[in-house]
Image (cartoon, rainbow, N blue to C red):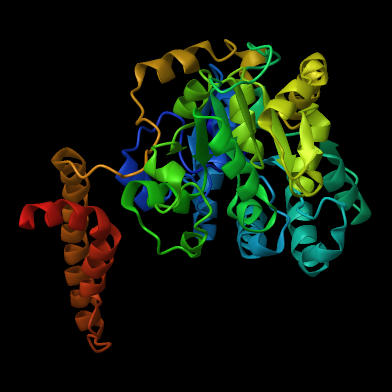
Length: 470
């Protein structure tokens, strides 16, 4: 029985590699615990965009929750008509393990597998030498994908050359799906003639840019000059620092990061991390300008119609900026006294907007070639999606935990209490299983959960308790 006959005339079902569906409203504690942003909130901007684009009256899109479960291949073949994989900088040494697991899963799939917008990561000089070691893994992955699709979609010129040098022909530059969230429409306007002390400015950046590329100086200078500056973090560790003051991640050592509790911007409530692109983009509509080293942090601003400039620190941000015509500067060539007002003044959005429709058509042609419908050509242009999003109530951006009021403590403790009960039940179940299989019931570390919880929430609680003693 052919695959299509087997599925009759029912709606097409697409499995999408993403941390969560755009319609999943997840409370903050739960989102941080499950890491629904897959370590970086920027991931959800392109996976949410892809979800919206592929959803049509005849197509249902289902999130796989980012997990690569090789043993699920049989079920995926049965239940889905395609597996769509939006990726960012997947061709990098630190992603090799995940890439291999993804390859193993794809190798067992009999349905089309379409990769939308993958990138290789190297330095600003586009030197692929540091990727030598992962070449076998990249070859296997791309071969597995091309066995199941017409072509592979890459983010820009560097990745295209990299894959062509490895001998692959069916490589198409399509950019990143995130910028096509609103189809062929993209309007970015400077609402103010120039930035001044009263301007609302958003800044973003990675830990490495802050630690070793001089972004800390840029942020500190802007913080001193612009009272309405706000830093928007993206890492799961940033979010946990804001919500729990949890410094257990190695990123907790970077005190120059505004998401660190010791940073003045943290104490002044000038930092946010978003779990949902919809609230992130909405908040950025009120800003005059966004800048920093995070490509999706600035794409969020552009989607909000807010001018943005990317400070490029590597090939993956540079190739995307060049492809889309996004205003950018190399982070290694910034002047000592960089002022966002200068970036704003020189930012020109002409190329971004005038070339957008052509890039959009190239993207939808890529989808067509790979047998995928899109809402702008085959649906309502995302109207039903937007309406459904408006009917949902998403949590606001995560703020720094500076207050020690009972309400903020109660919600956090309530959640921790629930987790401790769940873990206790899990431990009991595990003990019983261990006893049953006769593997010698090794003690399970129940206490460590409590200790970690105490360490995590220690500071704010001590602040509450201290005045009460006086």
